[in-house]
Image (cartoon, rainbow, N blue to C red):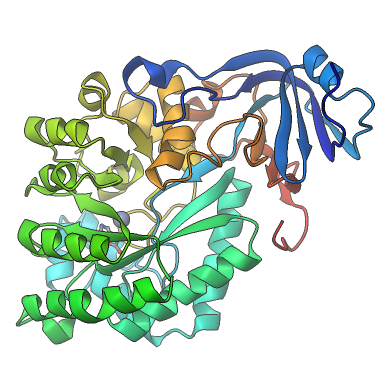
Length: 433
Ligand code: IZC
Ligand code: ZN
């Protein structure tokens, strides 16, 4: 049977190919350990998509006569889908290394914010920055992500906190999506903090978000999701519900930062509203887990944030998996609580501190992460018809990646069928694939 006529790229001699093939939905419970392993595999790509994947002899049979334009010898390497990072605060001005000493001295994250620092210090830097400056800084981060194996990224606004400054951030993210090989998914997060101007009347800021920001952002097509920071001293459960319901009325899908520091009821709200995902969940208890499960909400866990906040508090991932909640992982890349672009450090933190098995970790950074941003039909697994987003690792097995921590194990990255990283180096100035 030779049913594939055109092949742009053929990858041969794959030692182990972890395809993540499976049902067309986020994986739960024991499914998170089923990662679709194929030994001595090959993958054929045409027009940016996978056209054949399987045992090498079968793939060669399927593409017989197709004469691939390019062949890559994987040399026995491990191959996985491109990693998906479903929760980042990618576009922002400045950085916050000055908070490191405060943190070490024991000043809590929410206290730094209450003093007008934290998120609000990044808001000041982001408002001041030009679109060009924001673009250049985020472009450099996207390059780092690509070098570390990430091929799809969600990016939130939330450092503008005014209609104009939020639009600026989202416009930059759209331009990056056009011009950088990584595909971006856009989230409006005007409810990331209460800006100084509304400090004495936060409900008026909530009104502004509902009456002015959401209608404009939605009508301009600047965002697909709406997110909110539901946390003590930030937005209450009631304010979160109002904002998310308004967002849904305008056609946005819903996400929520819930139970990052305290369990206010954000995960219960996520279940009630059947949000696509709930994020953080470090302080989530039994009723929160039950609600996530009943609402079919994907839990996006951010263990690098726990690591970096250094409070020793991690999300109850084992309990969530055992209870049948689909778990995804993300960097939470942001200048405050998680200044890292590397999903590999997240994989290590998830192994050591969330006690997730390597197979569960891989599921959480690929197919479940893709479903957490509603891209599960396009990316997150190596299956015929999906985008050819593929990573070749400098490893023979999966365990080695979380085990050997703090360094980059990526050899080659293919994004939409184009080789964008080769032997650990970006191949071009990265025009969009
Ligand atoms: O800038 O601190 N948690 N938002 C909610 C963040 C962390 C980002 C930041
Ligand atoms: Zn976040």
